[in-house]
Image: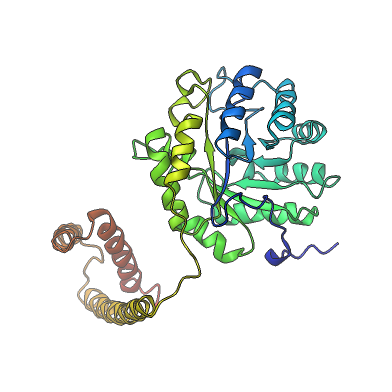
Length: 360
């Protein structure tokens, strides 16, 4: 069996969307809580046109004592969902026993969660358990930290086990402190994943990124605007009574409204005007590179001067003043303070390296 990872060797893991041009959507409750809750949610989602039903059977939780899923008995409810609605079913697995139980129950799609995807030992065990069922679609959520290599490594291990129906789920990254989102979307990481593994479909999980149901719709549209392949959205028949993550789940009715509001983007649409704008961007980027090169050459001269006169490289008062002045100047042009702070911190860090003689 070939083990060299080839993204073009992958098989698309999802059915064709019912409406051409629409994204793949997987929806269902965070957790399968009871048989009536699971079946009731599934029937409403099927009426809304959802073709893949998700529900957590085993729930890895941050704190002990929280609801950790109903376990294997809940798989029987997923079997009923499939037989009564015709939807495919999907659930998270974290151990070889989960894999065996889910496959035995006829679950159609498995996904590996963020807490598991960065653990090479766990992934190797799961991959080994999947060797007997290589046609099973397997989706992988990003690790909790923005570690692209760990994410790619998970796909490589599954690929080496013969799994070809692979897909990614971007659910954002853990962060410290109060922020607008529960998990930082940091779109750069899934965009780079797409560049590195171009044949790999990527879904976005706006429920886990947002942590709030009122942000799910806008994040869903952002995902489509960025060209991702679909969405995994948590939907519960009665979100306020959910046993886990109730704040981020939406009703099937609201999900139907959300789907109707989506505007998929045409990746192949080109125009003379767009081509002109891209050429303008190319010229501006070239000018930015030229100016940065000049700035770093000046930093090198400053470094020589400081060494000659025995001066300290980093002068905090000058740095703080520069940051305040540059950010204020940028704000007058409409650029955000956060963006400019990041730019000038990077420029300053490179300037310090040059003055220390570490580069150039």
